[in-house]
Length: 119
Image (cartoon, rainbow, N blue to C red; front, side, top):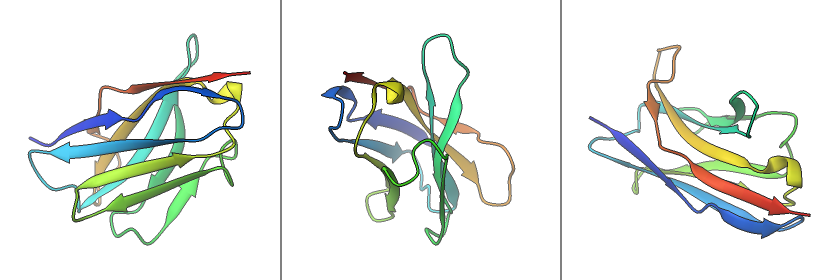
């Protein structure tokens, strides 16, 4: 059973940067499309970014495009989210998720990591 564990969250000033890490254990995620979602208090969980299982393509929500970068390291079985130019509205719990190749739903989820951005 593959498990995902996020880390790297914390408190940062507006304009600052953080790098989130999603480490997989119990199996490989090489055949998974991986994504980051976030959920702010009182709001629904929203999509942030995704990377294809091959690593060949990435997609971002309009709200983070140009500021966030998703990447993966197959050797380390890890996915990253580099977040630059953070804004107070980026504050949320960030979740890592995995979707097996050729499957439409995300069936792997981490426990989340809190990101707080002070203005």
